[in-house]
Length: 243
Image (cartoon, rainbow, N blue to C red; front, side, top):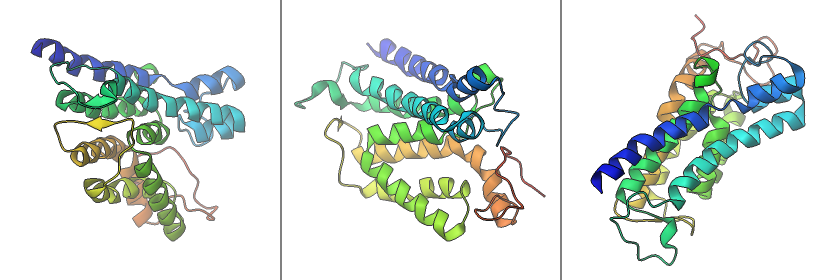
């Protein structure tokens, strides 16, 4: 039994990485416009750049598909009992998460976002992971998603920046997750403390997103990051620091 669980711990993140690597935005833009998102618009392989390049509804579809990568990857972990050595007393036993399933959940979360950001099909180029992360948060705990959006929105209003607040918002909601008393009824967590698992899920997302957002964050403090209303700076896909 232990060997089977270990196999799942190795296999599930790899499958999640492959799912995350599917470049829906790139494929939709290429199909309808013939353009390579890595070379046009913001040069980001994501829903926003697809909207800019291929139109609103095609960009919306791309964003929805990126969202679905995170949503359905986590849903698979919730529905499948990888570690049957744990029994559930829940009225919804198939939706319980014992200890090893929690480990698999955290790894799947990290690797599906990692796959989106560094797609194996685009020579490890990709998006910034926001849509895929949103799909994860909505399923794991919708309340966390609402809190994230509120914090992110406030930071955007206060700073007039778009990308750096994403990283700050994930960091700021971590302590909230540790004490959050509410969980959705479709998730019953056993073994590890539920708040600890939630915090580790958010931490895994933040760690994967960090390389994509640290450059823009440093540029913000240098006054060289895109700012809403400032036409001198453009929103370009560049993770490096502008010196």
